Image 1 (cartoon, rainbow, N blue to C red):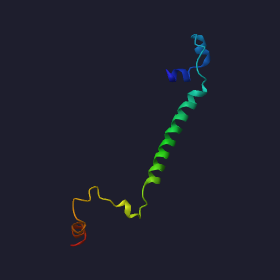
Image 2 (image 1 turned 120 degrees about the horizontal axis):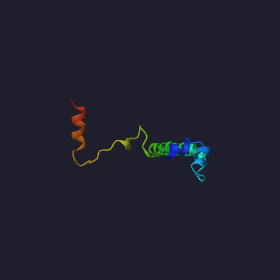
Image 3 (image 1 turned 120 degrees about the vertical axis):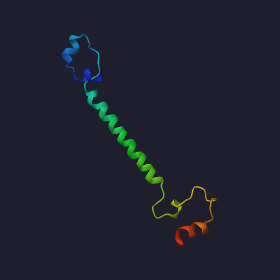
Image 4 (image 1 turned 45 degrees about the vertical axis):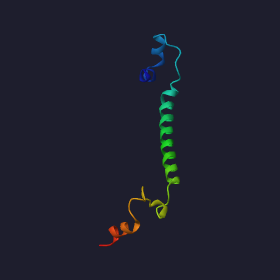
Length: 82
């Protein structure tokens, strides 16, 4: 229905008895506006995630989900003692 309205000339719509319909401007403006909004939301989401994350050199970004599993000395021994 959207494409029929967008591509049908006004004379054909008048011949069919259809006189009340939105301007053809909206056939292009609405998809462009929705696409621009989707891109802006994506950029805002990415920007918020970057702003809220710790810097790469921060030690706060190195966390274990459950620090009570294994003592740190045992972890160091497993990782660095060969």
